[in-house]
Length: 120
Image (cartoon, rainbow, N blue to C red; front, side, top):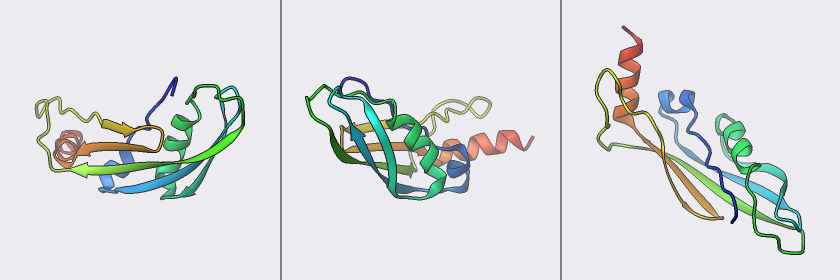
């Protein structure tokens, strides 16, 4: 892997409490450039974020064209939210087992803090 970009957790999905997996098929040319990214499985709300991120990936040149699948797992946790009520941390956390799996997580508590601030 030369360059990897992780998808953002869509705000609408976070606020709706949506979680889920996507499976995307990537086609890579012999120079390591992603030439096609196609959603195989997953809720459409995650699709544009996943495809936009994975299209930016660059892999080591292999001398041949190939395809493989990437699973992106969007998860909400019950972890403590960093930050304050005035400035909640709503950033996502990313972990990965590249190139096959990406986990994108955020805390429900951060979402609740963020949502309550907007209602004021």
